[in-house]
Length: 564
Ligand SMILES: Cc1cc2nc3c(=O)[nH]c(=O)nc-3n(C[C@H](O)[C@H](O)[C@H](O)COP(=O)(O)OP(=O)(O)OC[C@H]3O[C@@H](n4cnc5c(N)ncnc54)[C@H](O)[C@@H]3O)c2cc1C
Image 1: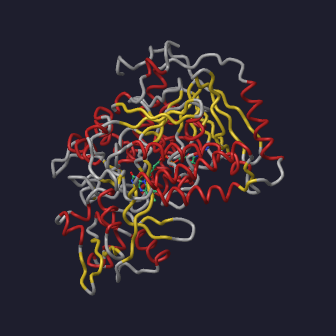
Image 2: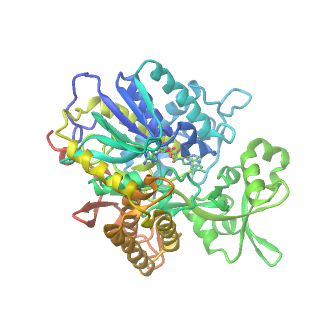
Image 3: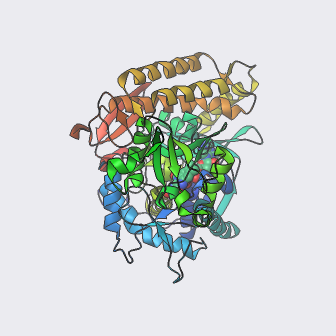
């Protein structure tokens, strides 16, 4: 461990760990904690099979270093370049060094990666990577990883080291003077709050999709947990970096992803100029143009003068059905296009959040004994994530956090938490017993409209000011009126976290007066050395405060956790 930031090692007393969220990062952390003899409560709003992780299709990256001479250093260079050089290089080096061992471990526990005749894992090309380094299991990589991890975690459940608690929605942290002692959950079945105390709490709650409404991701990842902890004192980071995936199809409920695997396998983007196809990515960036990083492709599609299409027909029906069956299925079912015969119309959509909890290299947040992993943590992707790196980050961060928890001092005996629990219970009771007042569902719809309208692929001061004014209006209303929902009380109280999160995203986007990666300002089109830093945002006495620090100093445990 890094001597400057580590808390003193602690004698091997078994400790209780609370992991919140059961996607790939949460499962990995739980397994690794249990492996080290810790007792884990794995609490989540849903079962692992429904976590967003199961949607991941294209694959997971590792420089397996074979015929083409790929190595972790090259993976590191590509990741730093893709992230526009603001990610913490040492953390990224740890991620890329760990990647080959992670893929081998996943294969060992049963992930059926596609293999060639010699039995070697096949690697595919993905945007922004200089080598083929994405391992995949058909078109259900995420699902296969979740299945294998769930099987592992069940073994520890049988040993009594992991306890599954499903249908529990995170309500708030039990935090006193900057120290976290556990969390309160809303039981979706019993409609009541339940406290769970722990020596360490790990947030693994995924991205912030809910704030934008329709995205490619799961609405279970609504950003509430990050927003709630933000107003409870957690520092967030780089919220302005929101990845638009270049190729998606609109459906009434959400945007369906046309996986990057389609371009990885040779798919070409074009628009029509009269009858002539213009392969604009190739014209702009040469033969590998279709596989530029997502920020670049999304912006180019956004700027195209007419509808953009993705063409894979030249691969032939057999190869498409072998390599891209899910892409075929999605395009046919949701776009009405048979991609073995015709190009499919595509458009960019919100897909991934580079921002989230500020963490150090051990995944500790600034609140003592609170850790964050997976997509809800911000550390490896800088201003733009490369495809295939987030499954990797989910596994790696779960491993890293588990190790840190085993080495850090536990929180110790909690003070009297009953006032916190009573206040929260009364607030939830008020929501449940109130006559219909301000329908939460309409506020969520308006919030999503505002965010999509003003925080799209490009932004400027005028649109950001307008978004801030509109979200402030709802924040103001929320001080005077309770939100109400006939679906679930959670729908109502979740706005207490989601609206501040939306406001924090807007504040970060307004503060970064340059263009970098996924943050493109029409009024500041160049990137500037003045902003080669992480955007850190805190909530202090009702104010949203931004500060700039190098990524490596986003959390300083010696200072933030203090001598405890
Ligand atoms: C369509 C799609 C395809 C993708 N393909 C790839 C790919 O090929 N390769 C790649 O590297 N990445 C891909 N990604 C991204 C990747 O899947 C995610 O970043 C990653 O799986 C996140 O894992 P996680 O463990 O952080 O969170 P998730 O898997 O999102 O899990 C979060 C968990 O937290 C729970 N939760 C959320 N809020 C609460 C709350 N308030 N209380 C209790 N529980 C809560 C959820 O129910 C869920 O169980 C893709 C994403 C999408 C949307």
